[in-house]
Structure formats: C-alpha cells, structure tokens
Image (cartoon, rainbow, N blue to C red):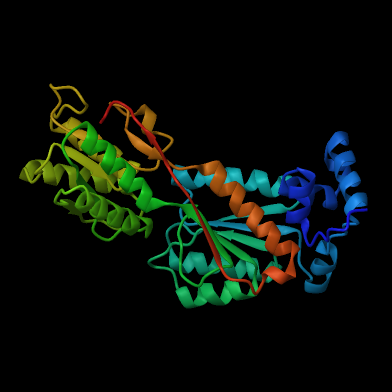
Length: 344
C-alpha cells in the first residue's frame, strides 16, 4: 500500500493515468468501463487505499445525479457544439445532463436556474448571458449550487470560469493581418449581446497601439443574437456611406463577418488576398459555417474540446471534494488557433 494519501478523485485519476470522467463513471457503475480500465482502477484503489467521499456527499446534501447545462442561445452553432461536447462528457462521468436554453432572455435565464435549483442537481455548467444577466441572482444561485462558468465570465459568480482568451484571439489576428497587409479596422456591435466582444475590442486596440498603428473601430447598431443580419445591415450602411478607411476589416465574431461578406457581395466588392481584391475580411471563433462562405473565412478557432473537458473536470472536482468549496475561485483560459483561408 502506498504511503501517499490520495485526497480526491482528481488526484487518483492523475496517479492511475485515467481520465477524470472515467474515474467518476467507474465509481458510479464499475461495469460501465472496459475490463482493462477497471482492472487498472482497482489496482490503484488497492495500492492507495482510496475510497472517494462522493456517495457520502451526495447522500448528505440529498443531491441528484443530474448536471445542469445552461447556454444563452441554442440557435448559435457555437453553443450547439459546446452543449454536445458537455453532454457527452457529463454522461461519460456517470451523470445525467439537463440542457436548458436561455434564448437570449434574462428572465428565461433566471427561470432556468430556478428550475435547476428545485431538483437539487449535483452541479451546473453555466454560460451566462453576461451584460443583461441579473448578477446578484446569479451570485445567489452559485453560492447554493456547485457551478462552473464557461464562455462568458462574471466576477464573483461560480466556483470557476473556464473559457477562451478572447484578447489573445484579437491580438494574434491583428498581428497576422498586419504582417500580411495593411492594418485592420475593427467591425463590431455598439452594444454586443456577449461580453466577450469587449475583451476582443481591448485586445484589438492594445495590439494596434503596440504595433504603432492607430485603431479604427466601426460600430454598428443592433441588439440581440441575430449577428448575421446585424452584420449585413451594418455592412451595407458602411459600404454605402464609403466610411471604410482601410482595405482590411476584422469582424468581432464570425457571424458578423458572414453578414459583412454578404453585404460586400451585394455591393460587388471582391474579397481576398490577391491584388485584384477590394477588401480583406477576417473573423474570430471558427464558426462551423466559416469554411463554407465565399471566400472561405480567415478566423481564429476556439478550442471547443479543451474548454468543455476542463469545465467538466473542474465541476467533477467540486462535486467530489467538499474542501474545494471555500478555495479561491479559479479562471482557466485557452488560446485560439489562427486559421488562414481565402478571405484574408
């Protein structure tokens, strides 16, 4: 027997060399994992005399085996992708996912949290609306239910935030566009629905200034989540008014970029890198449709799998170990990857 004390399932998974969700799945139902994996885990249990407090915690707190997943807008393919990854990983860990859509409404977001609280879930993976959320009510919910935020960060809400480094997205894209041609203007919503747009704005401005260029921001009217329509209408207005100062445009997200591409096509602009092109256009996110636009969209890819995996593992640690409840809130950010395509 090892003399090292294993405190929780996260430590045990690392020592044994098995993923954290697989360890949870085994302790929920040993027959649900492969025989070779089961043998490996049972050997580790014997060597380290490990007995998780998972069952005792759930009995004491009268929790269900449900894990809530709340997203702000399921019509957005990004959140569909995240929800699918999260659901699969939660099931692999032996829990039952409950997916709820806030549909861009602060009232619906609160209804979703009220519904989850009534069934006493083991934990919640939560992407808040952000700017229009009731922050006080969110704090109250997260104080009562183990909650990990993803996508949109709100200070003091949840035990952890797992997301993307949106300032890095903008910084890397600006650096690439400046290397490959003239510096870009930023095309964004004046009042964005998702607060990540503000982080991208800061990343754009700071990088342009660091490189010695004057930032130039094109802000368009529009609220809500109909980004393609907002990008189209705003793009048409800018092109008609001839208010573009530069031949390179960085859109705050791919969905705005798709709308802007449509506006350029309607007005007869050629988009791309070649000398015959009128404009270069880039986005951020690697939206599932970005490789099907014409021309295909240059962008920064979000690391969907890493964000989802880390969010689920962090929540499982919270469920497993009561000692983590009062520890300092953690934030983990994943960088994006430059995807060079035909539009820039």
